[in-house]
Length: 222
Image (tube, rainbow, N blue to C red; front, side, top):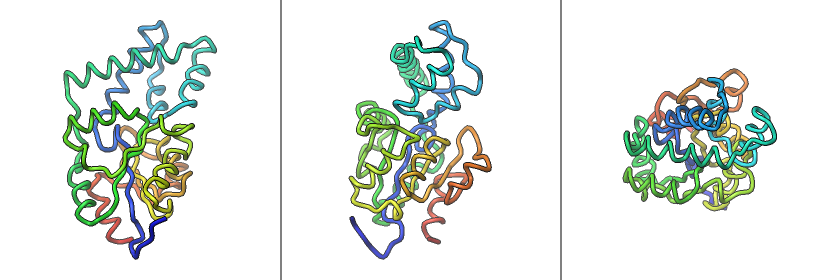
């Protein structure tokens, strides 16, 4: 593992809701996909699904809707809805995304992504917004056995970067992502997107910040 005089050697970002302002697309698409297949989604369900990976997402749907729930069919339809949202509205960035990525690069801090998306879609999205070269490594859920909130994806990211988890920072917007990074031993910074951290989640955080550029101040004070 790499070592240096810097306490934080790497910063690992989530994608949807953290770097890109696209989590809102999922909040619209999941209920629509469920309705298409004859299911009624409660308003809170889509929030629970944020960054929820396999095998947890299929199990969650079966708990809600029964053992015969066809997760793959509903998810595939949801993916088509997301594609249409992106076609119509593009992929907006969260405030400060480009600035924090540039600052980290200028400071010589390793930058990676740990996303619940697959590699093909992640790469396509980053190319579309001109950030394909902003990350040293891209780690996707299909590269590990268990997705978020399990710690696998962040552990794998740290191994790939040759960075000790305690010397890495995980940046997330959702509870499932926070739990994943915390479970892997990273310093977890939450930039809330759709919901604020509750008291229990706050205990897992190194910090909660309003915008991505607030991370600069955190790293300077570490």
